[in-house]
Image (cartoon, rainbow, N blue to C red; front, side, top):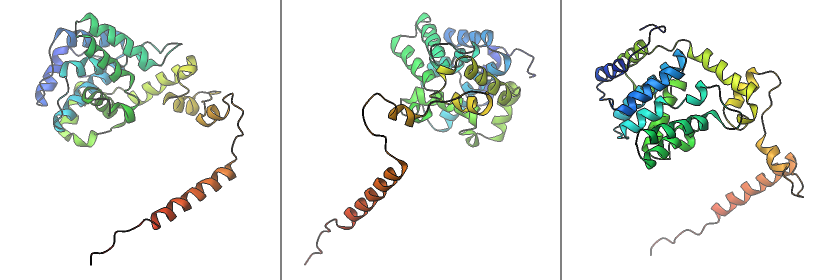
Length: 257
């Protein structure tokens, strides 16, 4: 399928069947697919669908059993904030999570599942936290991470990769996503300085600066002396010596008899 064609929801279900996946076919999933397609450029829409299929396939391979409908809605809608170019007052992940939670509630998915969808989308760029939040949040992040950075891609067969990429081609996603993230760093810098978009800002956006966690701590309005590098190094060396000595001096149990 070429990047100019609009794949139908039935195409996604067909891809799933070829991959031995039974993808959910509910009104909520169909509407999420339609909304993502309507609000996203083709490269971004293909990304969210690939991420959905990757996530479902990785879960199957790993013998994980997430809520299939919840996973589909979360992954299909995870980049609504990105599709809209971000917002001035919150990270694009939060904007997308808010929209997806409202979608879930309007489709009578229940408050608990709607909150899980919010968590999954809000945390999808923070996998070091998201993978510990529960199976649905973790599987959402797995699929998205696979398409973004190839995490887990080696677990898929060459045949499966070809099927997915033929149905939903990448359409120069690396370039398109870089441009999109740089636009957010340029237009809404205060929503990016403490997260991964700052890397794109520093690399590609003239004049962009990111916050330093060290400066935030030591510029806090408390009358304490900032430690020097030499003092910190001396303290760390002393601590290592103390720890090593403590291990050497531990009392060992006597040998019997």
